[in-house]
Image (cartoon, one colour):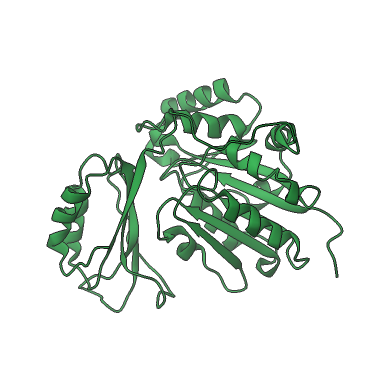
Amino acid sequence: MTRTQPLPLLLLTGFLGSGKTTTLGHWLSHTDVPLKRTAVIINDFGSVNVDAALLARRQLELRSITGGCVCCQSFEDLVAQVAALADNPDFDLVWIETSGLADPEEVLDHLSAPELHDRTVIRRMVLVIDGSDFPCSWRGRAVQEEQVRYADLIVLNKTDRIDEAARQRVEISLRRINPSARIVTTRHGEVAPDLLSEAGASAAASRAHAHSHDDERDHEHAHSEALPHAASTLFLPLAAPVERTAFQRFLGSLPTSVFRAKGFIRLAESPEKLHTFQQVRDQSELLILPLENGADITTGLVFIGPHLDEKRIRELAEVLAPIHAT
């Protein structure tokens, strides 16, 4: 059996902490599309892919790309994985969740590689925006605006954290950047599955077509100075359960260079359970949710930010001992 039609790709973008994984997780839990016919590629800027572990489902083909953005350092891995999926007629749909730092133009450019020509089609470019932090407070504002510009569906998320006047201001700002994209509002990434996976307004596809298969074009994938790839990541393994209050105190004391923190931990009060946490620098909410299947997951903390103060973070983490940092 061979594929007779191009494999549809759904691109999911959004800045760090916007709620991409939550949005995709809701789709996976509520879609009528058979998961055994669906593949998900998750890109994480850090060395440990926390988001991929959160999306694991039975029968779902889940692939992970770590250690850099698919728009630059990891683009060859992205193209190779998409090409392999296109060769497999068992899949009807592929989601690609980019890292929060990915430049959508570069991602589209890579997905226009000659080896994918006529084998894949970009169905929709979905962008998740944190309504309580737009424009973002880090210097990634330039890449966030690019993400808005290339989207054909914008999910305005976390609207429970802002009032109606603020929501309207955010929508006006989004319209100034991208007047043609559809905007839907939600609180926790809860968007109708059909809306996410239906064919979009082709804004992303049109831009991809403009880039594609131009042999005379110089395909250099270096980031501009405006993009936030002076960012760095740090992973600290956690070898033992920690006290909840000590852990929360540790997160509250992190230096301002930490924009994003996430990972998996075991709490001293319930060491048999694996928990996940997510935190964005400017948001005080800490989510600790039990996971059903965590036997193969490495416990530890992932930090992302510009010019991380590694020494200071390691010193603060001593209160969570025993820790063995790598």
